[in-house]
Length: 235
Ligand SMILES: C[S@@+](CC[C@H](N)C(=O)[O-])C[C@H]1O[C@@H](n2cnc3c(N)ncnc32)[C@H](O)[C@@H]1O
Image (cartoon, rainbow, N blue to C red; front, side):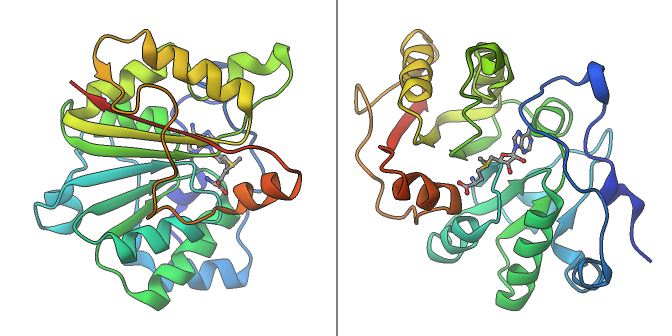
């Protein structure tokens, strides 16, 4: 039996949505997808009001917890969890095909430090994560919403940045990467103007060696886009 909660991905729907940073695509599972969901069930986390997500409740240990927002197909997510295993990881994504693809690979690899949740990240952070409890956020190539009239759909806006900082432990980090230079400049200036964080690199960060290329990054590089990385830490 498939848990119907996999199909509900946000608390408020349609015009009421808290953030319009994503487009709702397919919301149906084929037989293969259903099989993956059943087999990899222990890696799936569902939205539940009143439940707190942390390393203890998710993994039964006290490793620091990293949250990735919008992992897409999750190839980089799995590799990072495998290679940087002093941390636990919770991957958040609303794109059903990507969630299923990552679950399949995660189940095959049987990692014990990564779980996956299909839900709007804003709702998860607001309702299921305690302030000061997260060691880091990974946000790799979020949709740039290129047209000016769509900029308000960008995930990285002042409210969301403050929500991330609320959830970070002291010294915790936000690692943001994009291939859209104008978005990178905007996010850097939002961080620069925020007194609760510091930027050890002052401007953009050098490439962090443990981050593999993501699917969107490869597409951007094929079009000769320049990749910008930002790493900031909570004071
Ligand atoms: C451009 S894709 C990048 C995917 C991946 N990080 C990569 O680099 O290949 C951005 C992803 O963020 C997801 N996303 C956007 N807003 C989100 C939100 N509020 N909660 C969860 N996922 C979100 C979208 O569904 C989309 O798959």
